Length: 238
Length: 238
Image (tube, rainbow over all chains, first blue to last red; front, side, top):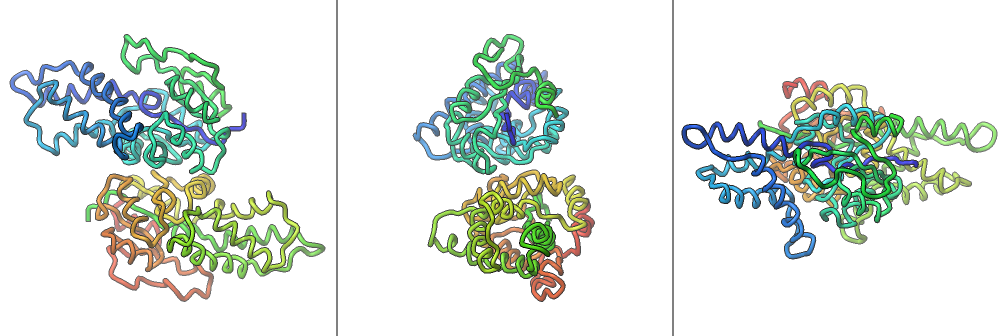
């Protein structure tokens, strides 16, 4: 293995989107609604928002619409959600602020220390479906030491389309085999591997909450399998 | 002024390309040629390489050829230079290594400390004609703490074309007026200003050597004028 860059899936792999959204939802609920606040199960809300993610990107992938960045897909999905959860009376600015909760997601406990170690040995870049602004603001919020913020938006293609992987490697001036895709999702790694990238599975067994059943383990042969970014740094000699 | 991001020109503004190339040239000259090494004035070599920069990009800007990243333009120009300076016998790998001297440029003395201060208050992004790989490798080499590596390659347009400025702001999710262009070149700032960006002139009076006559001073009204990145950080309250 002679990897020069580590390319990271972000939602779920680097940050814990679900608990971050639940926490902001609970604070939001206390401040809104009448009397005791909004009576919403924010875990269900977070899962419902995330459930709209793949179908929204699918329309772009399949060419039913041109390029739409993830902030805008999230916004469209949020408007649907607000109706489904009977949340009304929010101003445009309040909705925008809610939508940007995806810019304020918190890292897993091992993320920052692990990335900091890995940065000494490798170029660290995002290979996320998140748009650049989302990822840059998240990095400021969470202290993520990226060398480059790349992925779907600059490639003009959402994962798992091959262009997302291949163009990210090309922007870094690297062959696919010089890049190691790091993700908590088997599907992402299978797509990366098909493009010639190396693969590292990092276990995030509560990304979808305590009852998570998918992506609990590496379902294929990968170059590396790790329980955390610190464990990944150990294996990569950083 | 309510700037959220500082967008940096890189060659000459952030790094001292000329003295970096001269230093590598002198080391290269000692190791090559016969006897006393190559008898080349590396300052003239560096200036000649840089003189081919604008004409090469002009062909791309004017549509005489499709997108060609700066590494490749540098490489084409280097092949011409090697002939003009009668340097022969280099392998492809040696030429590639020479070409990547642009990935190994050294910062001005105030650069890293200034950027580190500025990073606490703003998103820091490149808005350079350098390609992503060049800028990422340079950042690793020189310790430049960018939040995002953007500019010509991801915009698909070389400065001073307006798309380079406008698309970089858009990738950051910002209006042009929320971005402050930082450059040592009046022409760059005039083009940025025409796109609605704020402007900061940073004096780099020896970028072209001790006899530099251009860009010695701010030739227009800019939002800020500074003698160094530390001076810029002072003015921006960082």
